Image (tube, rainbow over all chains, first blue to last red; front, side):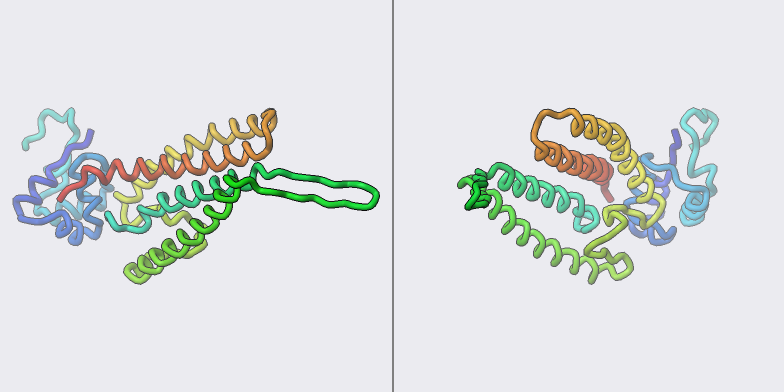
Length: 71
Length: 166
């Protein structure tokens, strides 16, 4: 399963779901779905999210069985 | 999203189907007198009191619902000029496709409806072919299937939005 740190980083930068959604051109609901793990974003959206949250895709998303991931 | 008319659209369709079912119930059991003699040929159709209530009541209810539905539709189109809904849309307006997340949710809901339709329609065909009941019951079953498909779609979409929080 794909895990992510979107919620954590969004909170760190003080963005609401709507703020982040506007930055990456998606709805607030889609940000909520990604945070809850209900939806795996495309590579394009992942890159946009990583850019908006000032990180890289590898640090933002990882597979659950990836034990080596450093949070 | 709570006030998104496209999300409410399946509820309206469910309502219209129920009212149509009420109308069908009202007109499906009239008393019929057929006179066919050498001097007179006539058919007299009489609705019973309950039939009248259902038939006329459902027509009135349908008209009232259409007025409110049309007002809501116009309000949605005014608020969302980029996502206008036609009064007679070919593509189901309940599809939420603003972005890839919404498309994903819509696809999941549509898949569930398709799964339901893929076995309910053949069953309906068998029912229609071999049913000893009146043809009116087949129409009721068609309406029931139409109703259930909207219920499945609405419940699936609602499930995804229920726990949504900022």
